Length: 222
Image: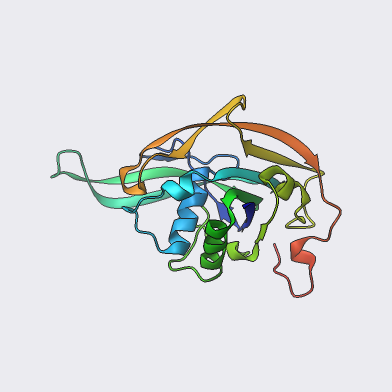
């Protein structure tokens, strides 16, 4: 039975790199498929050398509840081994992050697999993070749910993550006929760092008329 797993992604900082290289570490405007699958692998306890074909085959989408603002940081690493293997140098890298963003990620596929991922997110084997290890979540990724809905419908109907949201939500949905492309489709175990292109389409939808998750009694705050 097809279903959709909803994964809230909230934290002070997030970073979802698509084309980061060497001294420049950039971030996309919303979570990448490879990044969210990596988060699920950490929760499941899958080693970087293990196959991820079952996860990579899931249909992926993101709802942008609150657009983040770009913020920059500089990272200094000493005694970095150069290409020759002998020289050591100090490397200063520029790292970009999204500050105060709120996203709802969705994975569509077989319900048993999604329920296994959801259970792991509630009790992760390894700590989860929002793209980089320096970006811990403030809202547990396992606080989402598995819904008996297709991806777009599930993202449209889910309650907002925060009352401090934009007037409309932006959806980015995986679609083989979509006009846009993303280079974040895992093609092999993460240890091999091989990624392919996938097609996506974007649209805006009205904000669901339900209380925000962070406004629920005893709920987490953004």
